[in-house]
Image 1 (cartoon, rainbow, N blue to C red):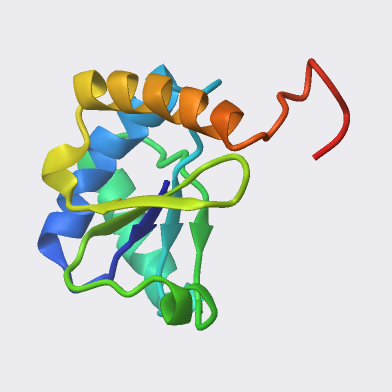
Image 2 (tube, rainbow, N blue to C red):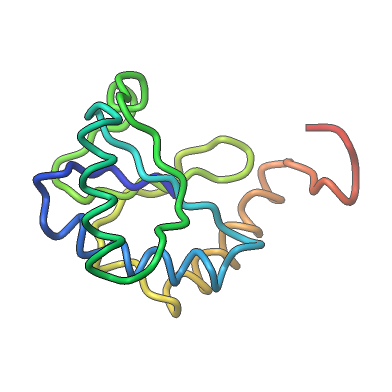
Amino acid sequence: MLDFWHTACIPCIKAFKKLDSIQAVFKDQLQILLITPEDSNTVKLTIERWEKANNQKLKIPIITGDTILQQYIHKQYNPHYAWIAPDNVLIAQTSSSFVTPEILSAFLEKMEYEVERRGYLKRNNSTQR
């Protein structure tokens, strides 16, 4: 799941705690990436403030200075989530209200079925991709 965000976006930053806990719960099924066009120094300051305020380290990887993904994912709001299946298919775009453990469980189950239906083989069944 790609999370497009910006350091001036308060809802984006507030979502970090929820995303961090969701990443921990679904660690074997889902990888969340935080994506921003901002430079790493700006982002570093924001993350340091967040970690201090929340008394925890943010464990989600962050891509800074992004110009490529921003061209391919047509986002209309921040935070904006793009869901990429294991076979590199963009399967959904949502807002933060759709990111709950219940919705994620159902979504991941459905995604696994759809990925297999499209002919993508699981790694444990074949080394072919």
